[in-house]
Picture 1 (cartoon, each protein chain N blue to C red):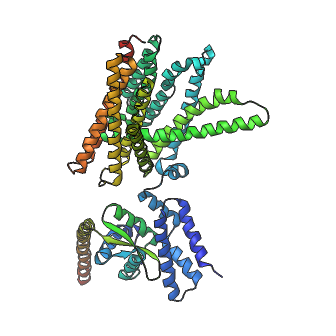
Picture 2: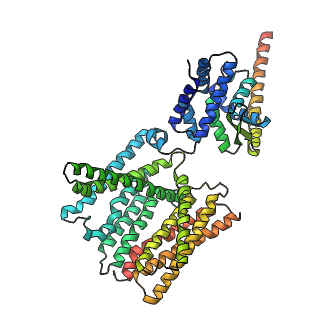
Picture 3: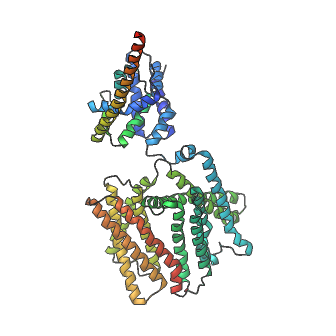
Length: 451
Length: 119
């Protein structure tokens, strides 16, 4: 006996397995098939005949799903991993993968190189030295990857390479005196500054356009997310190795510390860059979903924090160290806000997520205002220190950015203009960040006599 | 006679829009209508209708809503929008141009044949 229901199910499972169709799409197609089968049965065909003919009329499952993939908005990894030739031609793709492997190995080895001269960067006493230089082990390769990919004319690589070399020389030539505040600030701001420089390599000749910059912002956000995921995977692997070898009384931690983590980190960075970059050319990406999951959560946390802070009338800014940590939290929120903007379809009408985003901006603005007043108070009470100047600058830069966004968002809600204006503002504001990061990394040490 | 694939693909959008202009409809009914109109001469790979509907929806020409049928089957109905009507008009004009140009050509061919026969 022919089991019609089971056969229809296995047909739709075939479509499901292709991964390009959403569940409603599949229900729609399935119902089409059922309608057709019903009609064929009424004109006298057997169930099995009706099924076979209907399936034939529907057409090739592979072709259908491929058509869907061109319009569907929810596929990401599948395309990239299972069917890379759709997005890139395979020769090209192989070239990129080769580049990823070579660059990861070179970057990991470069990291190990100082050990030959008895300088282990992973020793805790070299901590600041390590942090100061960490960007030079990874970012030049990321930049090189994009420059080769875009086949940029010689001028761009020369300028970017020049900036990297100059930065490297400067920060390693700078002396440092106790309590090493400026050195620490340099270590903190240099990677951010160099990331923006790497961004120029990413954007290529269009680096001045809003669209390219928006892409770069989205790219940054996704790199952070995927990079974290991949690195977590490596840590799980490390723990696994540790546990397995421990079971046979062998201590594998020297291997993990000296090799797995070093090469793992460098390859995690390169693989992330590759994945996020190739994914860009696939129909849709992950950004909108992530943005929608995390912006309400962040808003909730910020609101609760603000409420508790006011309710218990405790200021988190009494301790000097918290100030900078707090700035990073604000920066994270701002990053999320910008990421949401970059993930947004600019032609869409305002949605509930735009309101959440505005609420997030306003909350961050209030917290930033409180932080700023605390810093100004500390400045007037205890005088200038590098940390305070950096914190003050950071908060001002953030404040202006947040205020600008809030203002534009409100005007956008009042239907004064296009969403595009918000993007233009945000992408132009990247200049401010680049200048500020550069100043803290290179200028502040000189101003404060390298203390 | 089998109509070529390219021609079928090209005519799919005006067909769908024209059918939806008469009344809201769902996938299977649209296919049935096309078969009826063309006396089974135009053979669509039926599954291919849906990606096209998706694309039309994305382009804002049509919109969709779900409605249950008498058999309890959920059906996705499509409704034509203002933009879709404009598009249909444009497509109609384009097809008219091709059609009238081709008709003239056919007519000339026939005339020539007749002259040839009289000589």
